[in-house]
Image (cartoon, rainbow, N blue to C red; front, side, top):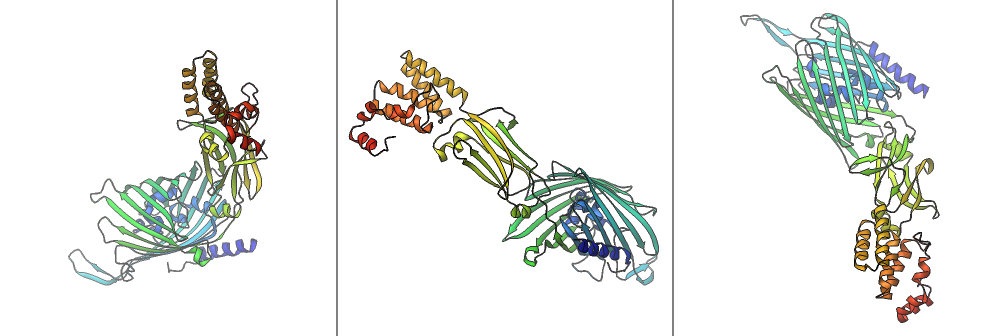
Length: 528
């Protein structure tokens, strides 16, 4: 571990210290950006900042990268044909080392042109060998503070033609609601050079699901104001991750005020036994110049493992889309189980340490009613309605205590419990139906029982009272009702008046009414 850190930090320092003219941007060509994917997002990437190009866009992001080692190698042909080596060339190389809550990085950034014809104001040729070049060497540091906010800074050394100077970029990244929503801000080009315009950007990134991200930002400098927005889609193609993204820039003060960008990434890391090996291509339609093409290789290796843990386990009632706390739940309630897993836990961590949610009945040899595998970090929500989800699989539903357990790799991590009762309105209707039966209002009693069973088919006393109604006309129907009541009550004593419902259902006077069929069932032991 220490050896790996030493090697990676040495590489970072070597890149920073070696001012080789091989690979910059910042001067007159600052608008070209860095990174195939991140340049499509443009300034909206200040709130994403999830790859090594964060050195440029928002150095606070390098403290939150998932790989220990991260690197980008990029070639851009701005305003020219793909691989326009005889025109403008922009090449970039960086390396970032991250250790969970902090990161350091360095980069080399070079832009140059081919031979340019220089002419005077009358069109006379002065030179045919004019060239322009920029070089920037950068060193970055980012730090995560108590998982609430990340801050970072990049120190830049510029060499623009024959001018040398230093500059500073500073950024901040705030995750809100875990990592599904983030806000970022950056100040770029803090320098003494007059033409290095200081740029201020603030943006957001929203990822409502694993397959979709939306980002936007507003940027302003002395001469330019713009809005940038981007969308990104993810999917797996035969275990090869793919991304497709598109960005749009809007310049309110310009006549030709839209710039449209499109790009894609294919990640071949699984095939090459690397955490990340992304091949990016992006295309930019400029406002008035030719198109720009960018090809980028994105490397990541040494992914660190995050221990899986459970932040919280809660039970709530979901009513009309609103979550509420409850002391007791009813059989017809929609019950919500909430499990929180820290957002820095990745899918591969959950594969290594699987998390399972179980709901059991402790009074029935820990009978397992639910078993859900949790495959993604963040807020896991599982909702169920006992009458709809439990009755079909178990055949009955009893009132009492149920236990919710969360296991990590088959080891119990957290537990909570809740109490369940039958629907209170149903209980009231059944009690009222028995009173109507006692008063010989049989039709009204039947209507109340039908209403009750529609709302909660699990309440055993509904069928018991129905049996009472049927006894006066049809003992066979009465026995069927008592059998159903006994089944729904798991053959236990009916709490509705402490009635031994199974004994009633198997009483001799009812069995005799079923003739030889009932006698055979009783003799075989199946009449119970």
